Length: 430
Ligand code: G3I
Image (cartoon, rainbow, N blue to C red; front, side):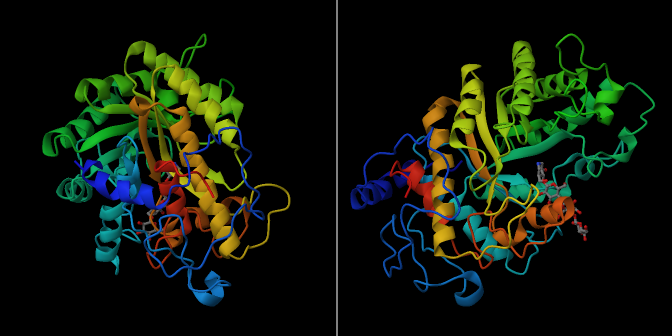
C-alpha cells in the first residue's frame, strides 16, 4: 500500500523552503467570510514554493482568464504527518466522468494516483449495483475499480453496505417475504467476503450503514425499509438492523474498519447526538471502529468549533474519525435569500484554500494519529460534483458552478489543494 515514508526527503526540503512556523490551533477560529481574506493569492512563475499560488494573471477568473490553478510540487497523500488515507470519490464503469471510460480517463487516473492513497466509489459499490437480485451479485464494475486500486498501491473505502435511498435499495428487499435479518446478513456477508477473498487487504474500511438518522422522525431514526422490517428502537436503544448489519460485517472481516456514516452531524446538535447514540450502542457490542462525517460544507458554515466538538466526542469514545465526503461549496443556497452566482476570482479561490486548510487542521488538532480514519473529498473535479444537481433540485437555485473540490475541470490543481497540504505539513492556513 502507498505510504508517505518514501517522501520524507521531499517533505524535508519543502519544510525547509517554507519555514512559516508550526500549524496554529485554529479549532475555535471562526471560519472566513467568503468575501474576506487574510492574504491574497499571488501570481508566481515559481513552482517550487509550496506556499505560493500560481495563477495565469493577477486579475484572472474562471470566466475571463481560465481556471485559477497551481502547480503543486507535492503529492497530497505524501504530505500527511501520520500516513492516514487521503481519499477521493470516483466515478467508474460507464458513469459520467468514469476514470475508465471518460474521454480524459487516463489523465484523471494520473491525478488520482499521484495525489490520493484511497478510493471510494461514488456510486458503483452501493447495494443495488452489487446485489440487484436476491441470488445475483454483480461485482464486475466494482472489481475493475478495486483492482485498479490494488494495481496502484491504493486502498478502498467501501461505500455503502446499507443505505435507505430508494434508488439504491435492491427491489427484492422491498416487501421482502422471508427472514429479513437473515437476508440482510447474507447481503453484508457476501459483499464483504467477495472483496476480502479477491483483493485481500485492499478494502480496508466500509461504511456499513449510511444515513440512519432523520431528525424529523419521532425517535430520530429514519423510516427506511430496514427500520420497518426489523424491530424498531426502544428505550433509548438503536434499531435492530444497525446491529445486524454491523455484526455481519464484523464476522465477515474482523480486521476491516467499520464505520457509521452520516451528514449534517457537526453543527446540527440533534443529528450529532443521534450519530453518537448509534456509535455508542454499536461500540458496546464491539462491532464499530469509527464514525464517518460526510462534511458537505460551506465557506462559513459549520464553524471550526462545531467540527472540533463533534470529532472530540467520537475521539473520547475511543473510535476513529473519518471525513468521508468532503466538499466546500463556495455558496450556501439554503435559506430565504440564496446568494447570487459568485465569480470564482483569486480572492474566493484563496478563501477556499484557507477553508480547506482549516478543516484539515482542526482534524489533525482534534483527532490523535491512531484515531485518524482518513480525509476524503467527494469527487475529483469541480464539474463532476453532485452539488450542481442537488442545489437545483432541492432549492431551485441554478448555479453555473459552486467550485467545491480540489481540482478544476481541466484537471489542474486549485489553491484549495495547497491549503490541505499546508495543514498536513503544519504550515498554518493563509
Ligand atoms: O449513470 C447514470 C447514467 O447512465 C444516467 O444517464 C443518469 C441519468 O440520471 O444517471 C446516472 O446515474 C446517476 C449516478 O449518480 C451516477 O452519476 C444517478 O442518476 C444519480 O442519482 C446518482 O447520484 C449519486 C447519489 O449519491 C445517489 O446515489 C451521486 O452521484 C453521489 O455523489 C451521491 O453520493 C451520496 C453518498 O452516496 C452518500 N452521502 C451523500 C452523497 C451525495 O448525495
